[in-house]
Length: 388
Ligand code: KIV
Ligand code: ZN
Image (cartoon, rainbow, N blue to C red):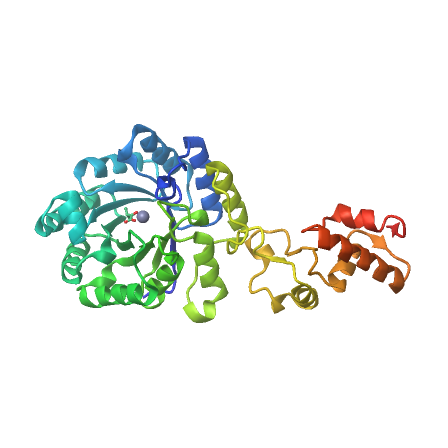
């Protein structure tokens, strides 16, 4: 088993399935280039058979991207797969990602197919895809709600047909971390020749556990590919968020023991680009990319961080692309943070007494105003100070 974790980004496919998040070809190209800069291993560029527009997007991204594998989704039928193969022709490295649902509910109510028919169609799809391209991923849609015995048969069969990656989605975000991890582990133990394919996890966030479930799929289950999106964009409550899962694996390398190739310094730019393109605002307290992710407002925390950043920071803001961490001045701030901001603003007060007087004025103002800006401080001290 390799100790590299493959990062498969599906912002441009599953992310775009989020209502209101559809993107133009130029927007998708711009995001694909940013994903390449991030060193994402696989970029799922779209679903070529879904429309002529999406076909053109996949084709344009396949032509433009050189360092990441470019992937197109396709249902498990020859027409979709042929369309995906056609769109991927210009790719330096292309992948066809074919899927079919395997849960009793989806097979019976949605596909109106018997399990035997689904098994047969899975085999035919992977066989056909392997005739077009070497890199073929098979997904068992609603895999987590599928019956274990049947899913083992399907995965065994598609590996035999040459699937190079097998993905077990938690399509509806129903999983619990330990249970999902055990589910993946049991599958890997029971499927013959399971080590002939890379195992992948794809988790939705309906119960807010997409990141935790994906990490459990890796740690407990032994999966070596995570499917995720920038800002966790995706259907309903979204997908596993790339920035969170990547920084968890990097920050807790002591626990996961895995390498990711992602250049995290491009994460904040990627987050902003996706947010501005789709109009989906990033919540301020979102891990890693939220405006407050590296901001300190309380006096005790500010004092700690000014003395040693790791007192209250487990990652460096700069490592994910922020210019710096942020000391937010407000009513909870202490004297040290205030003094530090005066210095940064080039304000020199003559004595400790003047500093204390300015600090008292600052506290009065902070009781009336939730955040104090640099302009407020400059106004407060304008009578007494000399500015450098
Ligand atoms: O959530 C899901 O099951 C999917 C598959 C198409 C991979 O997005
Ligand atoms: Zn999905």
